[in-house]
Image (tube, rainbow, N blue to C red; front, top):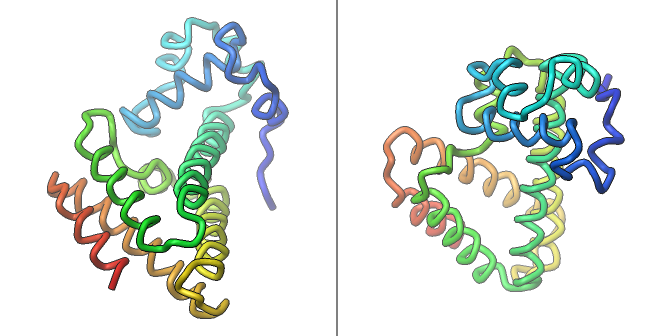
Length: 198
């Protein structure tokens, strides 16, 4: 059964990202801390202090750290989908151009000091399974985006071949990021591109 944040409507409201809103400040602080320090290492008190809110505000918006974690994943899903949509919209039919633009962006991102890898893989590794459903749903949504793109791209793949290629893209994407994290070698992003264009 899907877990729902009791305050999930906050995420879709325009003021959810308004800094005057305590719930938004908590979520923005958590997003920064969960991503930069790791979910397991970021405590509720740290989030409260960074957001300049109170414990009462925290529990008013997020009954638990797990609920805050789910809200974090929701925002990360929106960001990832927006990013992929951006590259698809810029290259709606051209698979090679899509891959080149996406890989160039990822390599540039990896060179920055703030990039810590895939937030979904990171959180999955730091939790005890309480976010499996949200993470799985996000990866399936990403896979569906790739399938739709591939079916309509200049590759002219059928549904079955598009699904197979979409799965390969996800495997290579996660593998590339993990190898970069393990070694610090940004050239894995070039290899990612080469493998996608084979």
